[in-house]
Image (cartoon, rainbow, N blue to C red):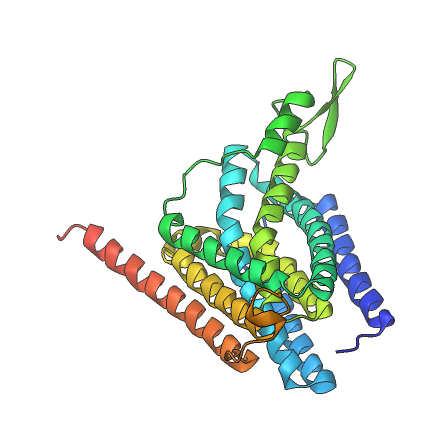
Length: 329
């Protein structure tokens, strides 16, 4: 897939413009978005992603369109898992509701930049070292096992990472928010506000999630442009998704299990691809092995089935538990 430089530049410019508009609008009027506002914006972003995939189909063929859709759905599902942690962060720092949009937006901008760096590094590594697919595959299977065995026992409190704890020790901070400002003056001294810490928490947390999402999408497509596009579309609607389904996330009781199955599937796909393209001299003399590879059509179908089954099973389980908990009159 040969993507001209101007297409890369245009894609990044449009994304930057969309984020800039968000920054200006939210900066002028911090508020708690209504369900209607979130639904319209989310529908717009989802429609944009679907239209983008149709465009890829028309210009580059069904294979690349399938890779984009598979990558986008995978990134979106993993982003939904991020929302659990985002909710805990907001609750832990007691972020006022009207300021949560600003915190999320800046956190997402940080995530876009960090993921862009990860995507570029991933592309370089894959081009230079084909055997890295073995590592990606093994890491995804390991992550899947970890999710399946402990993913549903999430704590109700947010645990700060070491970097964030270090920042809080080094930088004197106020206890009170100063609107959306990151710093404020107290008795003539410049101090950071809790908003600064919250934004760092959101950005660094998303970076940790990228450690499994980037290898996962490279297991579905080796085209850096499609990897970038899928990540951008997944992140663009994340803020609206946070407010739209924040209260419904607790109903997705099997989300961790579903994501574990999804990551394990992609991990196996990566290992099979690595065996097929093998260049390691101590494996079959450096020659590829005649193992089956999973086509993108099967991958896309598997992703839809896994996510659909997870959602339906979660809602049925939640409804059953609610009925059991309701006292009989």
